[in-house]
Image (cartoon, rainbow, N blue to C red):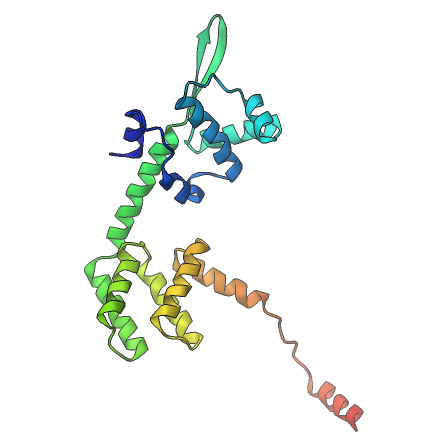
Length: 225
């Protein structure tokens, strides 16, 4: 059963996967907070919440809440329709599209893992490790490597980049490589291009040594005398 199906069948608890994939779905934390008010309205007997009421509750300006609503609708996370009630036009908001997007995201994630981790790629990855480390991997290391690729969805090329990083740092062991991959996941680094961009940023942040001319060095020697 998908999260959207669970919602339609009466399961009103906010799924934990929505929080775990927050950055991939919502433009900002403020947008997510505003969305939750409409989710609450959809899943309870609460009367209609106006944008001005939400703004007052969360301590934001009305314009900020309206912008959040615009962001959510543009991203396909919130829908609204107008109805005429007692001669007045009212907006009815539906927060369920965010759950549909979550289902799509998780399905896409699964298919990507299947595409990126065929048996030949995993075999090539193990062979690369053994060649670079100069030894055979233990069964436990192979099991961890397989889990990293298949369950965590880490691109095999990114794992190779972590191996390269560990070798450059003189710490070519599996625990250190795992630590590198954890840090990259925490920073949202999922591709080789992002790894290379991080390296370039690190190099750029390091103090540059200014070339010194021979004349300047000779002059310094004179001062020492």
